[in-house]
Structures are given as C-alpha cells and as structure tokens.
Length: 216
Ligand code: ADP
View (tube, rainbow, N blue to C red):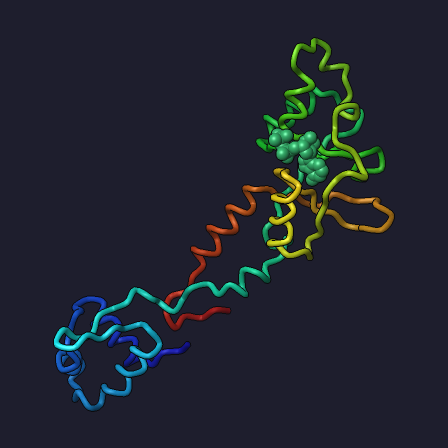
C-alpha cells in the first residue's frame, strides 16, 4: 500500500516519540487534529499504528514491507542455482575427493564422454568407498556413484519451493539443474542444494523494501 508523505511523517513521529496523542502529532506537523483525523484512521485501520485511550498512538512494528508468501512461491530455480561441479565417469575416486575439496562442494555430478549426466557422488558415497581401500587412484567413480536413471533432477524453470520439497522428500542434499529433459539425456547446467535454499531464505528476508518503497 502506498502511503502519502504526510502519513509517512506521522509514522516517523510515532516511531520516535510514541506513545503520543493525536494533539501532539498535530503540533509536530503544525496542523490541526481535525486535519489529521483521516490519516490517523487509515494508519490505525491497516495496523501500522495502535491507539489506546488516554495513552495515545503507538507504532505496532508492522512496516508493510513483508515479502508476500505468493512472491516466495513464485521464485524459480534459475534465479538461485549455482555452478555445477562435474567429474568424468572414468575419473578416479581419488580425483573426485580432490575435486570436492578444491571446489568446496558437498555433491559432485558425474558426466559421460558426451557430457551427459551419468551419476551423482555425495560426501558419504566417497567416504564409504574410501574406508580401508588403498587403491583410490585406480577405482573409477562410475562403480560407486548413484547412477541414472535414479537421479532426481530439476530445470531452471521449476519452482524453487518444488526443488526444496524434492530435497526433503528424497533425503538428498543437492539436485542437478538440467536442460533437455527428452529421453533422459540431461545436460547439467547448474546445481541447487540445501545451501541454495538457506541463501534464498536470507535473500528474501533482506530484500524487504522500506515502507512505500518501489517493489520493482
Ligand atoms: P550424503 O550421502 O553425504 O549424506 P546426500 O544425502 O545428498 O549426501 O546423498 C545420499 C545418497 O543419495 C547418496 O548415495 C547420493 O549418491 C544420493 N544422491 C544425492 N543426490 C542425489 C540426486 N539428486 N538424485 C539421486 N540420488 C542422489
């Protein structure tokens, strides 16, 4: 809701000095109490101000800038996805562990010779494969990865909230963002993870606009 300049001024005064009477607010603005009455009624009606008899007006703490739930529901994967980190099918478990450390990610995507999605490697996949093994440099990731067609994927046009639901439902930490959903021949173009969802939450809360501000 758009407030008039005068209504914004009233809110500032009440924020700074409330509880404050209508009379005192009018004095601040060099106006009469009667002139202010419609503005005070509107601000009270929409919940920005509270009013108590014999106490006056006080600020309720509502800014009118909360991100509406509908806006959160409309966010797409493409707005938040990050860059995928991939390894080749024939790369060794040793190389995959190195890539995970160097790139600072928790999930690697595995691609075949034609750069199509072939599998996923999680931290625990690599830990499990490493326990008591000496030959990590000669063990290809293809024998330990979770492989297609059992990979849960999403596209950049999917809703972020749908991707988040998949992470919870399938009990996994990451989804590859893919192009080309035909014939299960996926090109990996991005990555969404539980961290993506945490960042989205923080971003949405921090992007709250000031009262009466531009939402574009
Ligand atoms: P961790 O195993 O380190 O806890 P995850 O919970 O992401 O990490 O992985 C659990 C299992 O699910 C692993 O075996 C992993 O290969 C597999 N996995 C991870 N992501 C996906 C995905 N997008 N689709 C299918 N399987 C996955």
